[in-house]
Image (cartoon, rainbow, N blue to C red; front, side):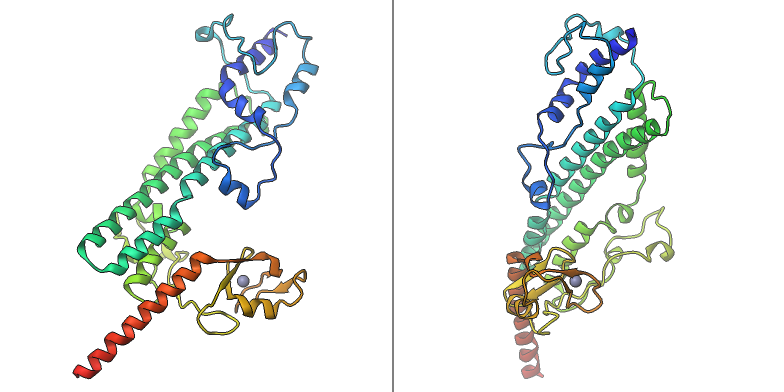
Length: 334
Ligand SMILES: [Zn+2]
């Protein structure tokens, strides 16, 4: 019985983490919740583990209020680690989730990065070019930071996995540290292409720059913008790469430039507002996506007004008009 008691007391050493979990209420995290949860990094439901533990173990001989600080009497330095118990495994999941939530906070300015870089790339002067490179650097640094957070989240998940498979986690701290180091090393060993070329956010970011510099031309695979490094395999590795998306900003229904665009939260396809309303007449009915090749179905209510896209369509229109003027001017000269 003694180790059980010690183990419980030991958890108070991690009070900071426990507090985060204990304070939180049940939240069914919708997309919006995740986006707006900056003040409350952790909103997770933790089962009544503490209550259970109390019931299973001997009556309260010590102060086992998890929120109180009862560390004074414990010789933390010489306190032996206790094996993780099964009911502590869900805590690991909660902690991994905390890292994921932090990563989602880092992602938040990505769209602004893309918008700014796209606008700067439109300017076509040296100063602006430098700024675009600077934002590119921020973007990559942020993705690296997310890589670090994922290393932590992944380590917690793998410790939990081992525990759930019945392995005794005798020293959770060391186990975790080792797993983090392994994950970090594997991230560090990745080439530039491997780190960024398959990241959706980075591809979206580069597309916006490409759009400004090459209006109306589809972007080639992103790897063409990142030089091959040692460790990059030849092309067989690149078959899944993203790129070559034509940004023509046409509504799949009207086949003309998007007007007052609405984007489906289900599949990400966008439509002119009037066109999608006319097509999906019954707001509550589930309809097949009108975009060619899309197998998803959604309701009118799943389509949200997309102001960011509206701005990009406007910029695209401006660019195409400018191109047209330029080529008209050339023809006159010829
Ligand atoms: Zn679709």
